[in-house]
Image 1 (cartoon, rainbow, N blue to C red):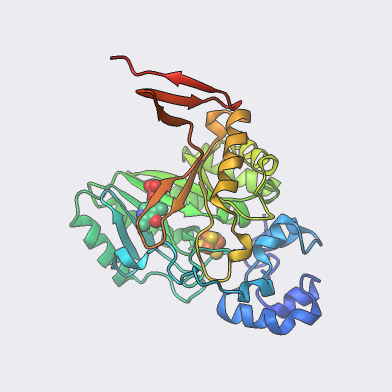
Image 2: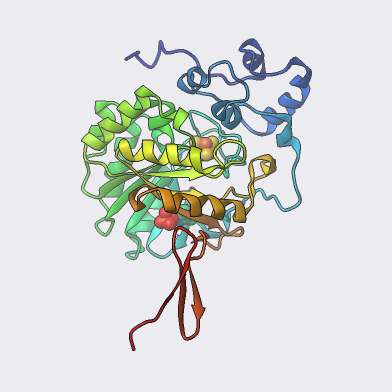
Length: 349
Ligand SMILES: *Cc1c(COP(=O)(O)O)cnc(C)c1O
Ligand code: SF4
């Protein structure tokens, strides 16, 4: 494995995209406008994995396009209401038993559809003072038993910094779970080092939710990093964003979910695309998402199926929005099977 200092560089500028043949010279002015608002970064591994296709499922996720300048009236700067429930710098408390803590704004890739695109890419990780304030808040609220580390990408921090955060959180006695929401094992697997894994051996149970949207992201080295995490006893889950033209068909998602499961990652959430600014070209309808889930229910084991969820705009929380199999009927229930046939079910009296 290459030491971090001699690895190939990430792509971070429109000029670099041009050099690599990933941007059309006629669109440079628009692309510069896009990247002045929303940061650009493509990790070396994702650059390599996308090949020379500026239109494949990886390029479409990471290479900016003029379509991002098309901001629609329903789109928002705070699509899921992180700010509505903000209780301290970096800390959002929406559900009684858990908080999310943004420990950095940095990521190894900036996804063009990111629901936090207004805040990611800014400078600065959470300061020690802010971490102290967040820990004080959590310590003062015994109902909080889970901390979800997010950002940005929490695993883009150094193993040493992550160790320090683990230490601080572990000292809060009522904390049972520390959960990472991360794309690092897939897009920058070199970061999953023995030092990092040692830093994750703490008293609260550590879980990881891996953000990944297409089986092409799961390169050999990405899968090896997932294996190192699984080997260390860290339960792995995944979250996927439903993205038009990238994964919005049953075959692509079936392939992704089977690949994840084989790599010991349990598909957890399929997110309906959030109303972030300039992301309309990625958004499907809810009925399209439900139709896909319906097909997958007939094809895949429950172990491979995530819950299709909507984060209700405004900060009202995530709810399942999958297809309905049950409707009240004649004092009982009308149930639809995976083949589409309907059956009457009655609760025992
Ligand atoms: C998504 C989210 C969580 C975690 O939700 P789960 O359903 O437990 O995965 C917690 N807090 C906030 C503010 C969130 O947006
Ligand atoms: S890795 Fe996550 S936080 Fe970072 S840009 Fe992508 S979706 Fe946003």
